[in-house]
Image 1 (cartoon, rainbow, N blue to C red):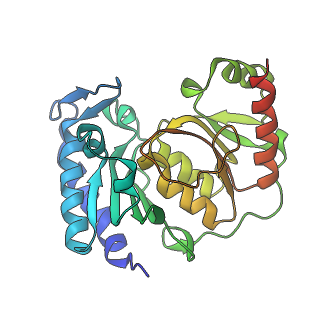
Image 2: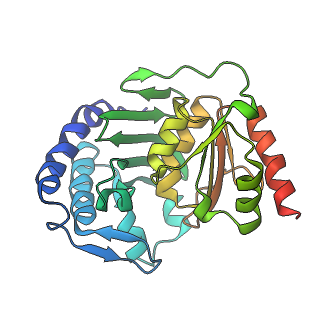
Length: 270
C-alpha cells in the first residue's frame, strides 16, 4: 500500500518555492518553446519537472519518475515501458498556455503507475492552494478530506459541462454548440483542473477530444474511486494505459454519461 503522506505534506510548499521567483518576473525569466505538435512549453516547465523528479526519487527511491517532456523527447519509450514496473508520470505545468499568459488556471499533476495500472494520483493547484489526490481502493480526497460519492442522477438540462471544443470533431462540435444540451458550458484550459473539479462536482460532465497519459491518469483514478464512469467518446472504457492519445467522456453520474453518449452518436451520424 502506497503512503503518500510525505509527498502531500511537501508538495505545496515545494511548488510555491519554485514558482515564487518566476512569478515576479514572468515571462522575461522563462524561454517559451514551441514543440513538434505546436503546443508550447517553457524553460520553467523543464526546470520544475527536473526538481519534481528529484523530489519523487528522494521520497520513493524504488520508483522511477518520468516527466511529460521525457515522453515527447525520448521517442524510444513505448507502451510496454508504461506497463512494466512502477513509475511516476509528471506534468509539471498542466495548462502551460494559461501559465504563459498569467491566467490563474494551471496545476501540477503526478500519477503513479504500477504494472500498467494507475494506483495513485496527485494534483496541486497553486493559485487556489487546492490539493487533490486519489489512491486506488482508498478513495479520492480534496485538501486531505475524503470526497463523498455524488448522490442521485444529474439532469442533463441542469448539468454544467466542461467541454474542450477545440479538440472535438467538426460534427460533434457544431452539434453541441447548436443544441446546447446542458445548463451551461465551461473550458478552463487545464486537464488537471478540469478532472479535479469534476471530482468535487464543480462540473458534472467532461468532454475532451484528445488527452495524453499525463493529462488523464490521476483524474481517471479519482473518478473511478468516486463510482463515476469514464470512456472515450465512442463509449469504449479506458482500460489499458497507452502513450497514444485518447478522447475523454467522464462523469460521476452513469446516467448522464449515457445521455452524452447518445448526443455524441447522433452528432456522428449526421
